[in-house]
Image (cartoon, rainbow, N blue to C red):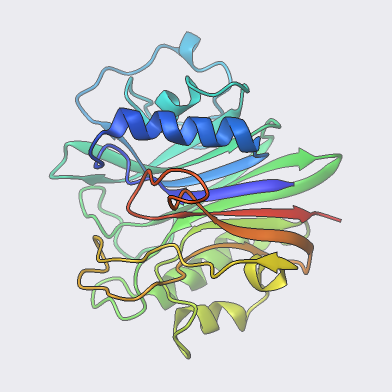
Length: 276
């Protein structure tokens, strides 16, 4: 099973359409089974799509409105495979110009979903409002939950990471009888002890990076970006977790200029593993 997670920084990038084409080329070449994306934006003023344009869309959130320039929808139009997909809005961005959300793409269809806030803040107009999205599918006859999240920082004064993670685990607890793959931008640095990464690892979760037989340095942020202003060090903050100890063949940083074009302010993480 081949997975990719990427914070796409949707519609905030220069030369955005070119970068979407580059991301599509990378996905077409690598043929991922699952893709999780964060900061998947759409302009709030764009018209909604007609149902006829949403043939492979799964409504994890029945109230979500998919608009014409939804980043995931635009990307999908450039892919060679017909991925099943879902998208949920999390909060507004850029002073209400955008709906920012989470998206999951899969070669196989979804048959169930779990969705909820993990932040205390639940006002849609507040940029620190956070959700987790999970969908259930099957891969080679094995049921699996695919979860996607974009979390706050460990020491955030308004929305610290720890209670968000606790709520995420509560949300996913009913899914624990089956494998869960949790992908996302966790905004907590693996190299910093006794903070978010260690807190996650004290629970049931396994980091596919550390399980991988073949891996690189894992760094997905290497400069100053939004949320990490002034950063001068390479950071590993984007992860793919499992609630089981799986056989992980390979973990690679993706879309970093050497393994795919740079298409966002984050690099991605790609992992190859076996579910059983």
